[in-house]
Image 1 (tube, rainbow, N blue to C red):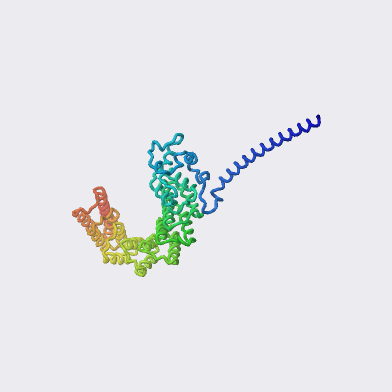
Image 2 (image 1 turned 45 degrees about the vertical axis):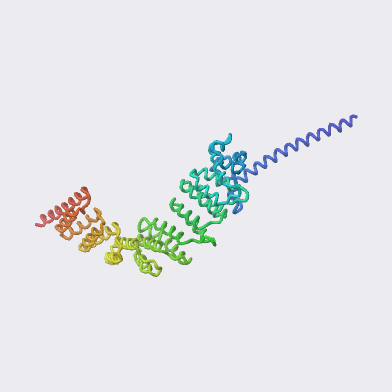
Length: 429
């Protein structure tokens, strides 16, 4: 009896220990599983297989505090029947949902069963709230047998860019470059334009390099024009322009090597860059090769050349290009006219400067104060003060003078010249 009770007590003790061990094991397994899930969530963006959409709980969704499960588990949003689609907003707001969750539910009701990326892209375009747009984007990525393509990524990137949320743009672009979807030329060109407008040129160059490596999204003419224009706009002075022209020239060579024929915008961009960097011989070389590319020069071509030649005081070349421009029926811009008159005045070619000034006025352009002042200074230096005074009176009679303040300032400047010359003559005598 004692032995039996001892065995019974021993059995109960063993059973209790087994139960305790099982409970400890079960609790530890749950904690380890939870910890494993958190570790996976922290690594998901970087270790997710290429082409797999991110989960709602991933750091990709860190910008949204949206309760997707709460909405999806609400009975009214589980059904996609026509009755639920046309329900009013009052009936489509189940209890326990926030206004944003209710609004989200109303939008996803517009997506019928078996929806495609084209349908999602259309819904995203109609949505003005960027955050809610991103919620729809993430929700769609969780649906079975669905995967985002370049259309949905394109719309979402444009939405974030318009809201100046460039960190989110970077996340989406990195997803695309990692292979989350097949890219398209329009998508990559949009990304290039967004990065350039945001002054993120290095990221734009990385996207361009990715395009060159792809087989179906090679850089197009528009791609090269976007990049060339961005690089030329970086040329703020002759020194900086000289540094950037190396990259611009290399990019143009890559374009020609890829059998992408330049257009008039491309060639004008190159001429503009060379003119800014004062490499006018290279600019003139492209100018004379434009006919070979079947791209006759336009007004912008001549404006860039004349202005660059005037900066180098190459007045003979500038006047030759100017005559060619007039002969083709183009009218120089006000800036080019002013640059030409100033350059001729500084070079002492006052007769030609006065002639160009009259032609400028006949074409409807208005000289600025600097142009008048430069020409007056040139005439006064040559001892032609009366001619300068007569020229100003002639312009005033034709209502071609500047505003009252500038006109008085110009007359005072001429009077100062007269007093200075008279003082010098009195000292000599």
